[in-house]
Amino acid sequence: MSKTYKVKKVIVKTEYKVLAALLIILAGGLVLLPKYEKNSGIKPEIFLKNVISTERYVTTDLIADKIIKQDPNLLLIDVRKKEDYDSFSLPNAVNIPLAEVLSSDSEAYLNQDAFDVVLFSNDQCYADQAWKLCNRLGYKHLYVLKGGLNEWFSTIINPKEPKVTDSELAFKQYNFRKAAAMYFGVGNATTTTKVKPKKVIKLTKKKKKVAEGGC
Amino acid sequence: MKELEKTNRISFSAVIIILVVLIGVLSFQKPNNVFKKDKNLTLKPIINRDFLIKIKDLDSARAKQMAFIDVRNGFEYSKGHLKNAKNIYTADLLESENKQYISDLEENEKTIVLYGSNPAEASGAWMLLTQMGYKNIKLLCAKIQYIDNKFSLGEFTIEKPIYDYAAFMKKATSGKTAAKKVIKKKVIKLTKKKKKVAEGGC
Image (cartoon, rainbow over all chains, first blue to last red; front, side, top):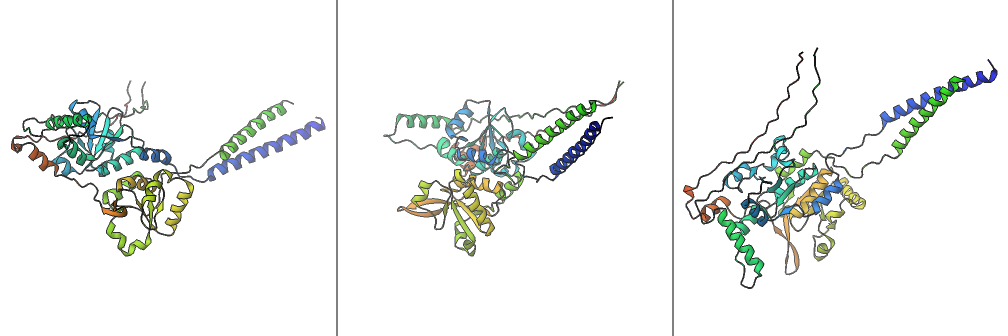
């Protein structure tokens, strides 16, 4: 054994100790890292952008057209109370009161990819709030009926006749609304719009089963 | 001498691990804005409607504790606004100086009252701030109107139907509604299927 070899061995041994100590300190440090608040749902910055954007609003004319054409992708959701829903609602609408928007039963309707969901209430205030609650959670394909049922009644069911000086477009729109009103039963007691409740298929992720027993 | 070569490898990898951890710690950035409030907590005041401040509350004793924020854009604000209201446009709410202003108000235990040209316009701002954990944020339930170019607040009731829908439809369908069938709509409840635990076997 030469002397230099012995010296080297001592250096190597201390090196080990220093490294081990460093790693232990680091591990301790990681445990003590400050907890930071975790964000649930989308980021506030994105939420703010979505809120400012008016992209979510759809007009009553568009929805009337879609109902008449029986658009298979349309799902109407009434966020008013149950009593209000029972007394009147749009054809084929599903009732999810605002209080139950976040319950797990309604998640199947709101958090899905199959339909374009249109939320509505009396004057869009509740529908808008339901939309915001869902948007924060990152739900997609949600829209709000602009003006709500009030707008629906003053445009589709009871449209204002345009003035003689109004544009041709206004007359076309008026004619469409008149025809739509008839479709929805105005002046006509015999037609009842068909009601086909929609089925929403809930997708559940399959969990892997743990294999048990066996030969 | 073999032992020395081994040590080199060990110390080399240890140093790399330490470096990686250090880089991770140093490059960690705290997110600027977070939604602190649980989703269900935001729903509660909406249903109870206690996030609304009515016009008549503005004259009460509580009004002294209120700080007003106008969430309309600068142009609308310059046309007319409430006395003592500060203009923070909804889009600028997350800027640091505005957040500072709001948290200062919060520290002074002020009730922060947001308003826009109608409650719907300000409700986005209300929802954002409430979900971010600010306390005492309220919404002024009024619409802004200009009478003779003078700024004033008008009564506004949210979710008020302008027609009695059912009665209107009855009338519209020429009074023969007795013949009309009322079809009950069914909401289909979907139940989760429980998964069976695989059982052993050959």
